[in-house]
Length: 299
Image (tube, rainbow, N blue to C red; front, side, top):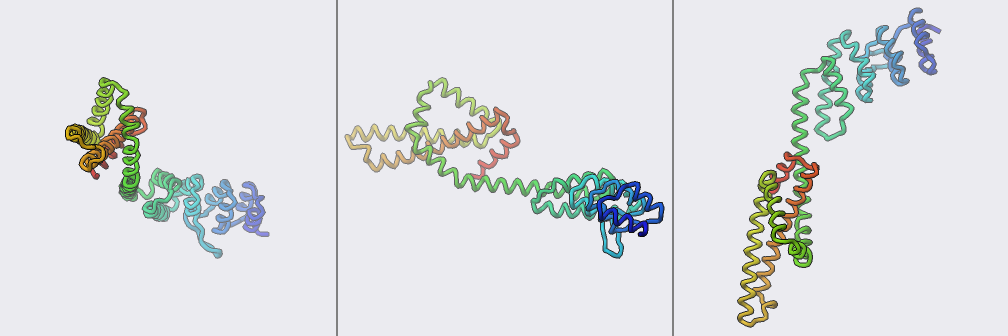
């Protein structure tokens, strides 16, 4: 059995030691792409290191069995140890190392537009850049990340918009259904001082953090109060005429308008209250509040 065959046999059997490999090389063994591939598949890190020291090219190697790249194997498997091993020998094959590294980084940039989980690949890119390779790809990656962030933001805004379109009418209807029995009853249990204090806190928060929503809420309250006052005046007028005001078409139309406006106001107020609570416990930032506030301008 030749020295090279001894190494191949030991790798195949999983029994090859470093001492045996060194002895085989001393006896004239030659490393090949096939041996490098076998050692990689077996996870023989120290043997791989020895093979490369003895002349194996970790970036790309060919023999009669085919072509093998330990660099490709490492990046495809997100193996940072094997990748670092390849990078430590970058000076021996500078042009190939730069070419392979650049191709890999650019492939990740292209794949990043498909919203794949590329955490392992991104770690590999940092290793490559730290080794001084593929540095020209850094602006491309930054542009790609910016593009991805913008696309994710757009998708999230669209998702929230669709959610609002579905949930907002339902939420308003729920408020409308329990407006008299629950919402207004609970509000009336508070003193005027407590009600004023609560509105003042929300208004101050809204003016500082969510001015668009706060302005919508303020205008909705004024419209609601105006409709309520008109409804009360209408009831007084109908009573004065000794009509059954409860079945009056005019009253029912006015009452419907007031209920709709009241539902709009309390929906906006509950939204403002929810954001206020999230902000107070640190569940949402000022920047996030500004983004959410801008969405209310789209209504």
